[in-house]
Image (cartoon, rainbow, N blue to C red; front, side):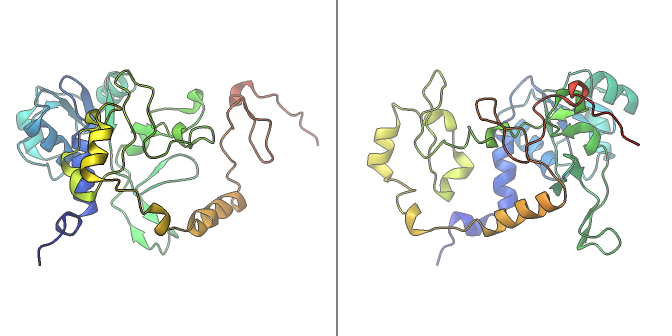
Length: 268
């Protein structure tokens, strides 16, 4: 019996392909090791040969012929346009706003919006001990306020309460009237989101049917998500600020940047 697409490939391979498809010629990418490096090589070989790759070791314009084992792999140095110092990399290129996209691997995002690449679980007896942070915490942040961001901002605002209303076949506010489209697993490796528009969707539905037709027959549960929310609340992690159209909510932090927040007088 032949295997289905999801049985032939791992979730990591699907993720690598999805990331590679987002690379564009001429854009500058800060590349991490592991899956990010594989995605970068795949993109350059398939459709974005002019993508500019930069690595933490100072290799700028690297053109590796295979995924590097680490940022110290000599394949990067041998194929780079130039090699610069680490301070120059982080100050001139990264913090100077000359990187379009940072592609990183991370085990967790912690409650302080930092990338965790150290341990999972108790530090003394962790469930998993990871190889270390490298430069990732200096490269990326999810901090809400701009004044607290010191790296490339990863925007999760689309998970805000006024943004979680998109459903299957929602028409997106783009010039081509792109449509949010359910997919079958075997479509994922070759999917082109630009082909799903309000004009093409009727033909697709007539030809393939609706992959989401039986969604109500496969209910999931929110218990795990709710328990994580309860744990974060008990640990002192506040909710993100709500959109301004909503009234002030219980437990919501101030809707003002920390530097502008009214200071409470100290009491002895």
